[in-house]
Image (tube, rainbow, N blue to C red):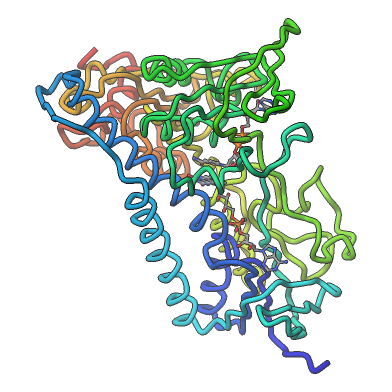
Length: 466
Ligand code: FAD
Ligand code: NAD
């Protein structure tokens, strides 16, 4: 078979792979990008973007419903509320289409050759790609960059299919499920649980831990739980799903006390985590060193095999799109002969619940565990003019700083729209800002950002508005 030669072959066109390919193109590295499904990967097609579109639409619909029920404190009244799911799904797909089309255009502009097909790794320099027509083309590369992402974890007792959905199907529903039971109260379970509840489904969450979002700090999760309760989402904590009933219309659940009960279901969303996608495309043959079920990489995204690199979800937690993109930049710079390291002080994490939750850097508990004496202070949105004017006074911003020199180590926030604060949080931490820098910076009024400045001032013992 005649092989096509390239300097770099990127396997997988998600946020890790497509950013790597574009940047490699910018740097003059001859690049082929192989994608088996759709450019943009999980994130653009069935992850970050469609979920945020659905969440936005659900929030809009909930506001109309409140107006219809006479429950709007703003005095807004509506005669009826209805949602056309076909139109909503069409709009969501348009958003996805604009972004994935944009990625294709950016790749072309950067001179990247995009190959549609499933890649099979032959060795560290050779990949066979089976195109949509079944034809196989061999590629040989100097550098192989693996960006094949992750896949949803299935429960043996609840295999995906028919009424049992992964996030991909749960994002694409074109009819409202009457009773949606969500197994797993983490990122996906809560984001999609909120969305479908607001769109009108009865939602119950079955979570193995004794609280939802178990990886997040208690104070941050409390306003989210209050909101779930306000919306009437049933929480079954410390519970495991045991499988469907014989008629397929119920989910058998076992509590920690060993009680078994049945929840009626129309659909079940299983969202118990994702794992790196490592099987079925010849990766095993490379015998790379693994870190658990992820490909082990160093701080330049090198695997244990020379000139084979890996980025994104394939390399394990945190499985977030912005981490994949940041690793892509590092790996490609190194491939192009520069010296860069992936050593962020913080990778922001945001859960797009209602209210939103953000964590960047260390929490007080992280500092305690690491033996770092710290100062920590919170500023409540109840004392922030912008939050009150948006009828969103729940939540707070919290800062964590070193006790000795006041260098900021972490920020956490929960409240409406706080996802947009993450950029400033990250910048401050990466630039080594101190409490005095944040407290002494003019923050525009009236904005949620004033709570950031006030939290820093409060840690210094001189907040104004609380
Ligand atoms: P992926 O995006 O998974 O891309 C991998 C690509 O490789 C895929 O396109 C796949 O088709 C391709 N591929 C795999 N094997 C082959 C092969 N053999 N040949 C050819 N192509 C192959 N993260 C956030 O940061 N923020 C969010 O709000 C967020 N929301 C999410 C919501 C949901 C519902 C889900 C499921 C995930 C969400 N994530 C979010 C996580 C985010 O989607 C991932 O972290 C991100 O997509 C990882 O990027 P990646 O490039 O590593 O892999
Ligand atoms: P997750 O790890 O966030 O949550 C899984 C939850 O399921 C946990 O609370 C866990 O305790 C629970 N669980 C595990 N096994 C269970 C069982 N047998 N029965 C009941 N509960 C069980 O995983 P996810 O929600 O599937 O999301 C996967 C990944 O996707 C996330 O870790 C994240 O990396 C990414 N993601 C990110 C965002 C975002 O950034 N906003 C949104 C969605 C997904």
